[in-house]
Amino acid sequence: MPEGDTVWLAAQRMNTALAGATLRRGEFRLPQLATVDLTGAAVTEVVPRGKHMLIRLADGRTVRTHFRMDGSWHIYRKGSPWRGGPAHDVRVLLGTDEWDCVGYRLHDVTVIPTADEAQLVGHLGPDVLGPDWDLDEALRRLRSHPDEQIGVAILDQRNLAGIGNLYKVETLFMTRTHPWTRVADVPDLPALVTRARTLMQANRDHPEQSTTGSMRRGEDHWVFGRRGRPCRRCGTAILLGDQGPDTQERVTYWCPRCQAARSPVDPTARTGEPDHPQSLASR
Image (cartoon, rainbow, N blue to C red; front, side):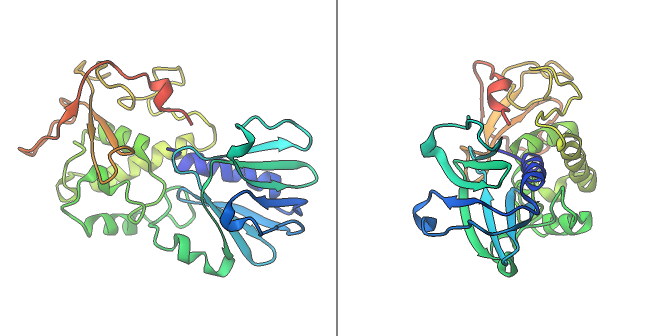
């Protein structure tokens, strides 16, 4: 799943291509928006909000898109071939005199008045990479649910917006925090949140997502995608478990030694063949 830094980078590139330009094509290939035509509208800016992208138009409308698991925006010079996937995967097309911005497999595509954006993103907590970042407010929201598992709480976009599974598991490892620890029992919650933000800031300007400092394939993560492989700190085999309401998207990697559980209840972990990080950490 694309994380907040992926959306941040995509929004910067989209803003460079679209801001100040007039759309020569503005079409939606979705049944609910099939009659909406943005041709002739001027784009004022493209901004990220957590994992959402907001494309604001001069006529007072906003196009909101969400990547979910497999969505992406691709930018091509006018006349260049599109390589983002088959034509039936295209959901939105925004074209100017110079660029074609093609949205593949996008989710939650909505067109609303800009004044009503809060209806779609107003519930989100402080954006980890946004101008509204407020550590104290993020901590207040996290601490308002003291019995929540920390591995679930920091993925809850209502607490703080932008963190995804990659930065969750890497942050918890680097702060030696067991994923099932209660929020109230995290020894230094401000340090944990700050670490997650620091990692995302370090990666937001490029497509690669390294948490170890190395960009070499197979060396870029501490525990993410490394089930069954030795911990880079202690050599213990990395475990993989399911956590959260949607376990298909919320698998958790951790080292049982470096992140030893302080609770008598330990989750069931999956063991077996090692994962291949290059297939799990695609961006």
